[in-house]
Length: 414
Image 1 (cartoon, rainbow, N blue to C red):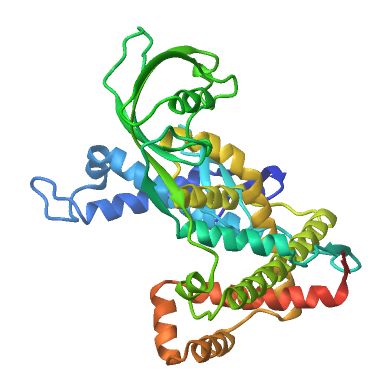
Image 2 (cartoon, rainbow, N blue to C red):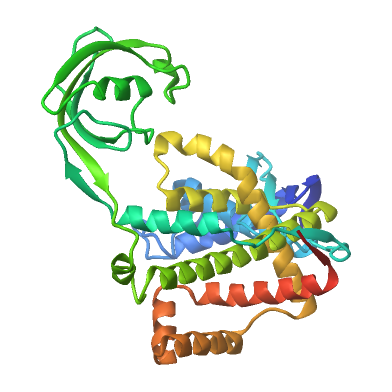
């Protein structure tokens, strides 16, 4: 195709390319479009395809021009991609389209291309592995959390204290000073579910009691518009419940699973915590090593990839529309690091022949099935239905890449 191509911007993964198409090429496209239109429309007094060309071109001028314009731009785009050898990551967009009286066409094509990730420096780094020792205090804390999860709440006819759950009818004055009808809340005192001044007010009551008082909102209240305001609050304490945790004995241990005693449960908790600490340390080493590699190897990231990932997280987290802009801005650096991380892993995997294939996935599924004592076909079907086969493949590839990196870099124990 006879076109003139001028690169106007080449920064990072973005390309802006000015394209000029001569009038003669556009005129040929318009003639072809006119012939196609003539074969599709009916003109009074003529059979389809037999009406004079001049009549067709006059009556359907806008349709012919639009069809010709789309055809020429499509062919020009394909020619640009071929000549410039562009490896596109998104569909290009045409900007500043100009269609002159002489039928000459010009527009600017905005593209994003695959980044050039060479990774010249990926060995010789030294990272510190976090300690994985588990203390007795950590084990005790975990067991206390388990007891807390099995706690029961018992009503009491006493003034509430920190840690109690209260059921309260609260009414807070509006901007006019009027007290609307109260709403029922369930609040665990001391858990940060209510501002301290309201908690203090509640702890002065017994079930059935009511108090009305001016309360000052804290200076660090999340809603800036309410900080430091004084409001009249009416509170009616309807119920107080006190938490009772089960006794730390063998009977409770048996309720928690296949444990004969508290000692057996404690041993299992410690083992689980140690395994978790090892996993966290492994993840930390991987993260530190990737940070070093990313810092030592500059490469560009397509903005659309980052935007897509941020939007995916926003959807997964159920971010409300009115908070979307703030989320997109705040989460963008994290998403960009994730894209860079993935590019580093993919590049090393392809370069070193570490990419997992179907056979590797089948082997991993076989291992999973043996651990569960089920048929591999059943596990495969479940993963396929859940759309997780690709996730398994990526996981195997990542494990291979990090094993390769750990052989060529230093990990110091702390």
